[in-house]
Length: 125
Image (cartoon, rainbow, N blue to C red; front, top):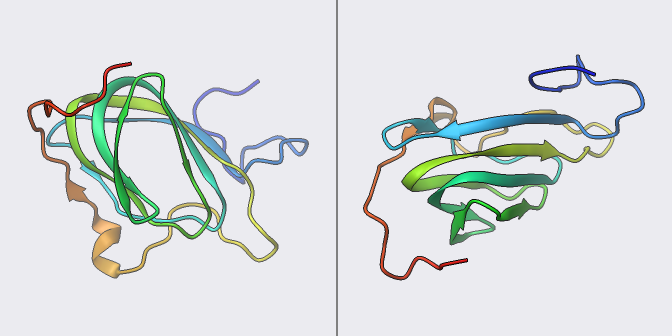
């Protein structure tokens, strides 16, 4: 067993995923618009936010599973309540790169994620 993030340097040989870890983004925090050479899953455990994935914006909240296919840019657009969860990068093809990849160099620096009031159209689970 290990604690913290699992990445290509720390994962057990038997584990086929590339990386596993947790994230937390508060209003005014930073996040980087990025993609992966593998599929990524987010399991949202706390909060409410608007995210973008596969060229569309979606609301996400505790209990949601966000699935982003390989090569699709994703981002956290705005936060209504501090967002927290776990990510799993599923494994990449031969020659694939681990970690965040960027369409533009300026995406690497990340951006401030604005805090906004909860929109009236936000879904209730």
